[in-house]
Length: 77
Image (cartoon, rainbow, N blue to C red; front, side, top):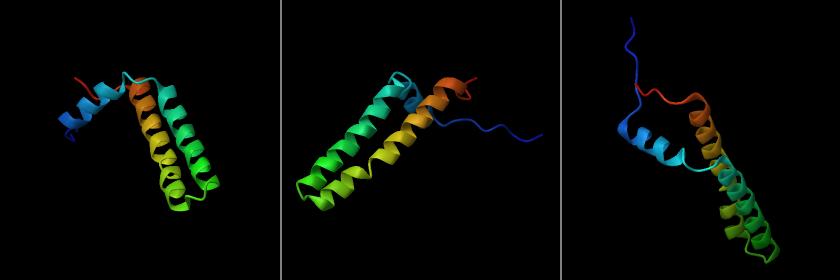
């Protein structure tokens, strides 16, 4: 029988901390990054606009991870 794998201490600590953050925070933070990126683009700060605009996808991904952990739980025993 295959040995069951478990989360490490760091992953458990991150899950405990992020489980307290409402999912909406990730959504609105990502939208905020997009808005700030747009504003920077309008004022011709193109490099900074691109940098900030690229934050949206990782923030949304963290939100998805957070939601999955909240719904499915982790492998705590």
